[in-house]
Image (cartoon, rainbow, N blue to C red):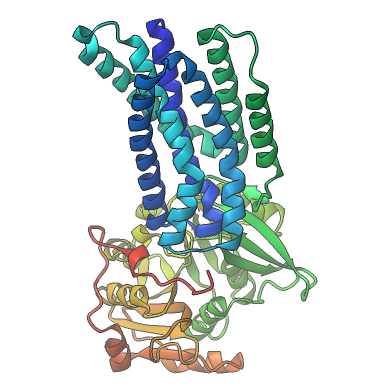
Length: 493
């Protein structure tokens, strides 16, 4: 085999493995979210596939003529790439929001085999390139380096270009087609065959058909989320925006003051307490999604000005095109990661900051730390209020840590939760909580009154009771913020 051809096969097969690894995150996100545990499962499974593929590929190349297996391995890699889509969709639909063990099983069933098969190409090619033992080190080193270069390019092109430019499934199917065509060409070339076995063609067609027959859980897809919009049959113009595994936003196009979710109603309770007469507020929104709260402030507190930090441009487009959002002159939307963009904001310019950013079922860890909270505090006026939506169940270890983190900076802290959600820990207790913080005394009585006016009897925890609830919880920092490990998801997820 010419050196250039050998290098090209190793480069492409190695790149394909990393393309699949990066896209695995987006393929699985609608079912299991995007957490550190998901990344861990994918990286671990793909590495296992690479290890096994290297071992078995080298073993096979010693037993049979490598010319007979290189092409079929590449074709098999293409077929298995096709099959990742229906496997993830089929398994994920029944195991949505699964824990780390089930997530690892889904990842293994979908991505271990293609990683192993494509990696097996490299030792087979190396075997063909070895003319004598005197050049073993040079040949192995060169092709290993080329394979690593392919993996690096596959990573960069996928993460920086393909994910942003194209939906996930067409990219995976396109990769499958590329590998199948390349494999066919290699079979014809190396095996001096003028035809492809009927069985191989049948397997390719079956894999492709299986892939295209898979259900697609996304109406829209971005680099960050699988999104779809669901109409509420109980309200003529009520719509929920789903991102991956969660309903993130709800808007009523006829009534922007309608707060469907309990935690948004709590936001409303606190806003009513700090501005009871509808005074205008300067507000910062960390996370926009359907833009529920900026719209609420616009109508309930005329003259308010909102700055929205939203990482995903698709969500802004969906809000404008499907959910009736018009930014106007009073709402500024900054499309960027809040951790980066908040640094550009001036000191002491906001009366209110609302933190409602999520990645999967968790607050992104870098938006939960003491360092980020300090940035929030810096942009608030002396009597400004920080509201943060937190989702947690069971022992609520993440909630306790987040309260401890906020309390490490702000003088006055309280938290709103459903009635009984601060009691004895048990599966299912918990849900959404809203952490309330300020350097000025909080209007606790007014918050409870606003809550009762909504015909609710939610719990507002503060003072010694809050201190006892938090206990010895850790303060989250940039150096230590194990959000995914602390978080307890809903048992049904």
